[in-house]
Image (cartoon, rainbow, N blue to C red):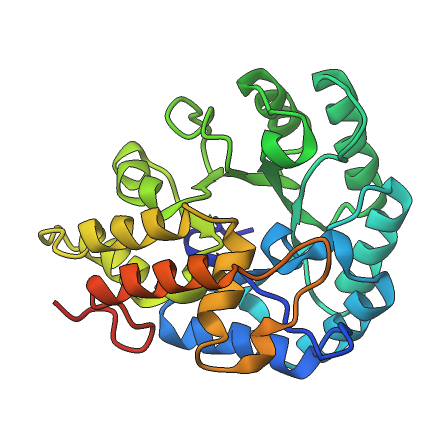
Length: 294
């Protein structure tokens, strides 16, 4: 087991006009942003509309993804509330050679730390070869991990509970565990997180900030002046004005109209929002293929 570290995008899912999953283009998108600077991509996270995509389509993508040249660079999100379906999808993934998973506790129901520990215990018992990144995002699932909960899970399952994506930001400053990956969910936390000993980030906007984020990451470990972090944070701040999935699909559709396809109840930005987003990014001289420009 090696520590999960670096710049990871919460990958977008690319859809056809009939809203079916375009498996080929979803994989090509992930490979492209790895080429641009990401160390890897989380497939079927919240940014990938995972709760809205069918299990059959997910399995179809996993079969094709197992042939990707970057197979070892992927983390598989379950995007499922059902414990049984989560385990079944993980079994398919592990049979194809994937072992790193991003798993959020179920949404809708109310529960506490003890119930969360039981949920992950069942998963680990069923898939002991898995390496699980806990997904801490109270806004989406209604539960926020405590320090004690994570410490107990790691104590029980040190080989399986290997990290946390912290999108509630109540963990990354205070959680200290040996050989455990802490990955905040925003570029705004990247540099501070690295200074505190975090392992990197997993974020939605790394779909478009891969090059900038990687530069900040590499400059930190090379002890170079941080000449790109301000721009990176400004770009993230612009996207944070909107729903991130809406903003990213709208922005990426400037280059390829297929990104306009999005599953209800999600939507693209309206015309005014789109104009403001594009103008604000243009004022920063931000482009995905040359975003290290001054």
